[in-house]
Length: 160
Image (cartoon, rainbow, N blue to C red):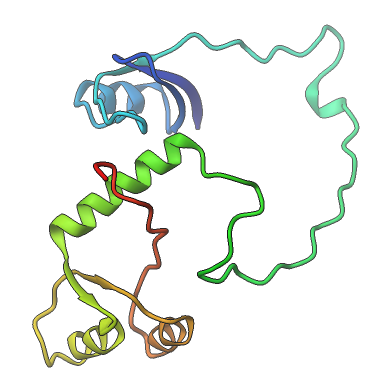
């Protein structure tokens, strides 16, 4: 794997991991590498500072401090906020683009999400992309029934 610092034609910088340099070049030439801020497909590698160990020392020789594992935390509920603070702007932009795609390509079923997902799973209705609301208990029950669902953070629309 290779790590690159990248820059789009709008001067937004971000990073990415690729199998090798040829894989990055192929994806970039096809404009399949997108800027998470503006969505531009015109992306190139930016200058990066190399990680060079000091003479006579290797990174592996440096002592590693043992850090105790954090205590397990319950998953955040729908009303809880992340303790780290506000969501970074790049992440908000990605989530807004994801929301726009979901709204464009899926049917909104509101609070009837769990029932509609079950009907599709049983073959009672046509299989299609849907989105809506489900309680934690409903989402857990759907997963226990073998119905694949994904819970997405729902941010305000980019245009609103």
